[in-house]
Length: 117
Image (cartoon, rainbow, N blue to C red; front, side):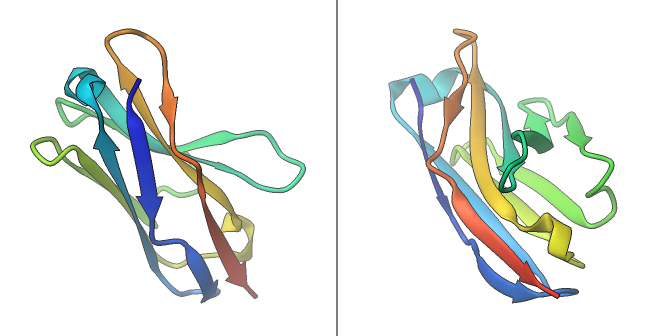
C-alpha cells in the first residue's frame, strides 16, 4: 500500500482560501495511477472532490468546479488542492486518495477544513 500524508487544513472564513497538500510514500507509490481528494461532512457519505491521473486527466465534483484546482507533481509524488471562494458547505474532513495498479485504494488520515459563515 501507499502511505499518504495530508496537510493544510484549518479554519477559514467564507470567501477565503486554503491549500491542501498530500505526499505519497512507500515502495508502492511508484505504481500510483491517480491521486485525488475526497471529503466527508458530518452525517454524510464520503464524496469525490477532485482527482487527477498520471496523464493529467482531471475530474471535479460539480459543487467545486470553478473554485477548486487540483494539481500533481508526479516526480515528487505529491498532489495539492487549491480551494478558493470557500463556502460553509465545504466544511468537512478532506482525505487524500491514491489509486495504484493493484486496484486497492490508499487513504490518508484526513485533514479538517472548517469554513465559518
